[in-house]
Image: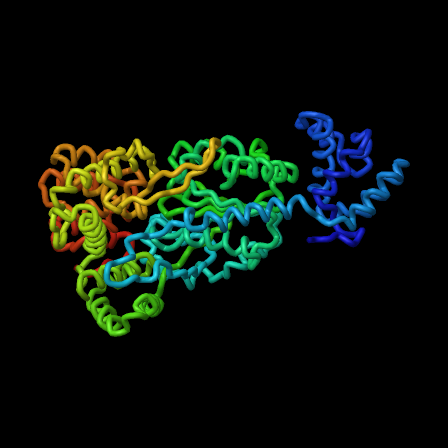
Length: 589
């Protein structure tokens, strides 16, 4: 139990709440403590009843004077107003053990621990019949971004692919340890952590939650509220209690404590800004929290929010600290591979040798998730590797479906699935349904699905996993794809199966939408833009676009998604000339 034994220490909120019960003429006390008349009037307006007004007044005084709001100052003020009985109570409270906050926080920590497996995003595809690859390789290397690097056209380099910007780390970015991100003395702070898909943003936030729960870090926060923004229940939240991932009764108790101190000592971990539908990014409780609006009731809280680079421009402002998760160097990727294959040491040099002769795959290994997937595919393919990351992802999905079919449809006698164009007839309809679900979900900004939306009779093919969602009525089980990248690849497959006319119209429709950026990269890899109508549509967009950010995105399609030699030469030349104009160094074909 925590004790406050010194009268010169700041008053604790629990003690002020207790004292408020015996307070009379609270307006007089407020002025004597140093609050202005306008501040007293605001307390009068906001308080729903007399007890709440008295509590709000004392907490306003604590918030305003911070370390100056001591037990001694409060005791002296009450003595000057001839309230010696209350002055004596203040002295007594200064040595009274604190209970309320610590017990509620303990309950929240217990809830996190109990639901750790359900809330953590696990990747079930890691498990194979022959062996098990370690499911997680935690690696968090953060850099703080100081200013933006502008190119010759004045466009920020943040629009470039992450790998292209890694050369700038020593110039505009400096390393920062996780334990130091709140060490600047600010009472409240907003931290944006950017990272590419698979860089470990979600894992990092859950790791931060774990460190607070275990008492190893972030001890300055009474509460750490972990919010997955893809959760439909969180997206519908109207009050802070709706965001707290625990039982309704406990959430309401915690919310009362948070509201009393206007969010001070509270850290919100907002996971996946890019997964929040655009209209909710503009207007929602989440937006109110990030902007510290008065109606949110948590003006003095701190916030960490994660996002892909493509969706976070509106989060950057003078009050936001900008961090990035930096991926592996080549040596670190090799170290990760060695760790993942520690039970199969003979495979380590063989895999590393194959990656060294395949620069496009080695380039992808800067992302931790990609390393895990590549190791997995290397094992299931008998120490062989496809030539591109797209083929790696396709092989991963094929293996998930093959294992599922082998387990649930033994009568099909499927020996292997070599490509997504060879899905066994017994599960082909279910696969096409999931591709359609993935596409329509992205169009609607939907990443979590109910049983009804999936179809109760529909087979999930081991490509969906259960996701715990929290709503006013309580917790419920829904489903999301194993990773957002998996949903994006299935959406790209769905696009590629459309009639050509629909492919063209759909391509033109979704091209400007950031949530389809990765989908179109994968679509480019699947189709190689071989159909003349697709080529014509794409070429028209390239030729008429003056949006440099879209040029960067298009350049990424041609550089990383597939073999550039399969694309019409005039498309390659068009993009390469624009890239040359921007002063970029292009990969050789």
